[in-house]
Length: 182
Image (cartoon, rainbow, N blue to C red):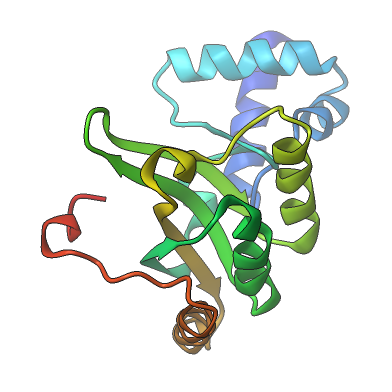
């Protein structure tokens, strides 16, 4: 497969995916190395294609569509991050991102795409190993998540997630100036 043909194949594969595809998966599907995929993704981005790199692989924004998304504000200690994330995924939700509203730096957002217990375990391993530190560490534990649920009962799932986060003491009140800022 030549370069242009392969990039067209990658784009089509990402468009048809129902979530992120890893570089290794794309390499295997294309018959090239993962490094070639990284270069192809860079070229596609250079052409204006909005490809997101997540912990779970590469995705187009449309691969997150089809569900209901809600913004929640939470606060907890760093050692409670795993409990918070498991509360969301155990009820069938996904944590799409994390954002903080820092007084000096403004809004900082990072893509998470945490959809399963396995994703939570990987994220927590990165934190525990020192590879990363939680973004909420710079805002006394306050942070925001766009959480998503899929299927006909998505709204009920999100309601239940908010209820459980509240019961655990994680849910924080959204301040008037924060609405529409995150």
